[in-house]
Image (cartoon, helix red, strand yellow):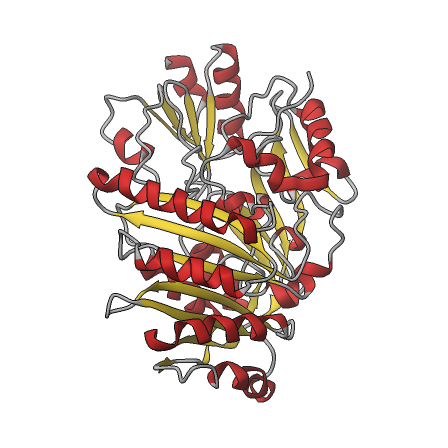
Length: 443
């Protein structure tokens, strides 16, 4: 241990150290694991040394970046946890419209730097998300209709492989690895930095509408039709939750990244749906929009999510959603329908590891509750709800929302799965990077 500390610039934490418990805690309160040691990496050399230590001592390795992966695979029991969250360097090229960003950054930190130059790229919808996990899983966000996913805007990535080699993956270098990193998660190495394409985004027309609980069915049906005709400049997220009166209530969040003059016409049909009781849509800074959803994720919650893609939302599916939200045991839970369309849907399915290129919604049952004693009841509700919705779902899943269910990893990659298996066999045949939504090689 003394020799490891001598080689590592960052902190090496053992269970007796004061910062250990704080460093092993993750977003999901259901996760309570205790690594043998935590390496808080200050740079790439710390990643390489930590990986070598884990391999030479035959210890399980987990990798944590900056954010809130609900599966909790960032922390292991009894092994080595590489914590990249201290690695927050970022450099913006405003002329070339690119950003070089280290893996420990959150969306809020990334946006803070890019917005200083009136630039942005697609980066999720919750500011405490980490850029690394988001991008490696594909990366839906408010700008996906116009500019594609986060992974579609990735230009290159620096990766420490299972053998401790540092590679730069791009369209011109290690192109096979670059393909797999754009959606394949953390299966192929530790990505220490990302280079992104940026776009001119500053003020957007954004906000949300809430519809009366007496018109929930009408609102969902009308939103279904509205989303199917959205122009690429307009991205939406539909939500179903318990309103103040305890009844299922619909809200729709929007981001229009075209001109203010064309926004009104695009949004007018949405405002005519079911007589909204709240409407705060208007011009706002993109960075402010990115912070709006944070209040929906209060700290110290237990989380259990179930997710899939849904192309159509027939009336029978709407009835199931309303029935289960009426039974929802936690007022903090809800259902999300994040629209993927436009530029993100036009990319060929095999162009990146992320295969879900269609005009459809990421359907997410987001269960969260504060008291661990209530876990069994909330988990049971979530599973029953998902089972009831299964006939209406695509049999596909956004890997970033895949909380449990190793059996569903194939659903995350569809026809790209076998190509990812071959890539895993090449770059990580011993499955060193297995604490993730794991793709197993054939070695």
